[in-house]
Structures are given as C-alpha cells and as structure tokens.
Image (cartoon, rainbow, N blue to C red; front, side):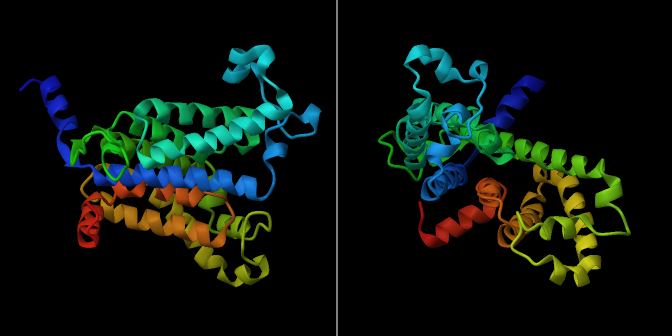
Length: 290
C-alpha cells in the first residue's frame, strides 16, 4: 500500500458517531448559554452598538462582512442587536442537528460577525469553538442524536475526531509555551506564585487573596503542574489520551469553580467527549442513549 492510500484508509477508519454528536451539542449549548447571559444582564444594546451611538462597539468596517455587503442598509443602532438575536437563533440549528452544514455555516458566520462588532468580547474560547463547529460542519455529526430527517449514521470517518484532537494539542501547547517563555513567573521557586496572583484577582476570582497566602507552596506546585499538563498535550494523539483528559478536565473544572471566566471552561470541556471516546460510548450504552 502506498503512503497516500494508507493515509486515506487511516483517516477514514470508522468510529462511533456519538462522541462527535455530543461535541456538536455541548459546543452549541456553551455558545447559546453565553449569549443568553449577555441578554440576561441587559448588555446587548451596549456591546453591539457603536460607541458614537452610545454603545461600546468600535468595530472596523473593513473587517465586518455584513457592513460591506449591506452598505447603506446597515443600521448601526439596531443592526448589532438584530444580528445578536439572529446568531442566537441560528445556533439552535446545529444544536438540534437540523439544516445541515449550510445552516451551521450561517451560524458560524453570524457569530464571527458579533466578534467584529465587539472585539474585546471575542475571546480565545470563542474562536476555538467557532473552529470546532467549522470542523463539525463537514463531519456528519448531525446524523446522530439530532432531529435531522437525514438517514442516521452510527459510524463516521475518524478524521474529524483526529483533527479536533490535533487542534486541542495546538491550543494547549500554545498556552504552555506562552507560560514557559515567562519562566521568571510560572517556573519561579520564590516570590508570589502566578496562581496566587490569578486566583487572588478580585475581578476574575471567587477566592479571597488573604486566605490563599498560606497555600503559596501548593499554588507554586500547581503552576508548575499546569505548565507540565499543557506541554504534555501531545499525549492526546496517543492511546494515553483519555488518561491525559482526566487531568485536563479536572483543571477546567477547577477553573470553573474558582474563577469567573464566562464559558471558557465549559467551552473547552465541550470538546472532551472525543478525548474520552471509548468511555463516552460505554457510558451512553449504559444510559441507553443510541
């Protein structure tokens, strides 16, 4: 077998479609929940209305596709909030697995435009989840655990799962490399630990900095462990993936418990069904989810 034939066969080896379907559902739930939170605190008309019209938006015209397409028909005071609700509505299509890849692409495009309308609100996790949805658009993940009328597929080619794993490796490696370049902070063996500064930040933490001080040695070791975990993320591409994912999931659950970072932890955990794939399928079998 020549290398190309081997690669094609490798990427198309069958896998249970449920882990990818769960990623589709969880990613959409994270995005929908995040947008609903913006609506609940009454910030839609603030984030997505231009600064000169009383809002916070400072979007760049040349990066905003809808402004280019609609031109004089784009209304700055109402266009942003309308786009917000359109984006929210469109995300229900991939959530329910209906509309196929065209509706999923529209949802991704609309959500990306919200990022251009309010750039400070377009965080790394937003881009990660948009990329994940883009991969899932062409994976067939809407053919399982969905309301789609298309024929159900119990197995799918494994390339979307492989690509998501590789994507997560790049995300975690980039985070670990960034911390490694700040050796005077993350790997320091004296002075305040970086985790102490992070977890003691009143703007992003649920914890009291004064009560954290006695745990400084533990926080220092925790910082070293965070760097080690992120730099060891290539294990995601090996049979040890699920065991690495246990540590990764615990890290994100810890962040969600101790910090106020919106959907960050839940958005990252939304992709973990593919990391826990063998266990995910066994759990679903026990629950009778087919």
